Image (cartoon, rainbow, N blue to C red; front, side, top):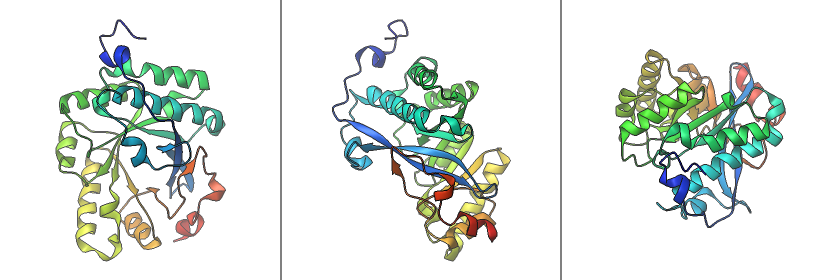
Length: 259
């Protein structure tokens, strides 16, 4: 317990009432022909979807849940991914569950040390769809995580109302273009124009762009032509429960690189 930090969550966080585990979804680097990382996605222990688990999150157990998700993802990566030595582990976090970044990260660092997983391979994602009570606090979290050597990412970019405003306040290392902008982009001039604008802004701010939700070769080709090289989606692989898909299991990678 971190009784001297002043964090109520450390002392008073309610236990989370439902057992859960993680599925892992690969992120591919199309230019390098490699797996760039894996996103950890919460699932029930019998494969129940994220929505069923997240429906049990309350203000009282939010901190406990957020901490437990991080630890579970790192423990699984440590036992099954540490020998890879390269791929990042991306963990979603709830900004409203982080009281003080340097204190709230301790359980994650302890889990990484125990699992012998290099914490510099951790990426922390937050979504612009997450309710943010204090954007200055989120800016502080992103700044501190970057200072500690973690990669930071803004998920679902373009899905909410605050995307550009958030980028004006703080710059993560990476933004993930929401699948709503990705879907059928090859036949949508409006989506193409919007994504081009996002990529131009990201390039100016030195932010890496990842396109998520890829389901077709046409979507991949359009985004690749626009300058994206990191991709995630069912076109390559589906999330696997407590398992990290190997490079040889990635669908369509060789064919995509040939074009």
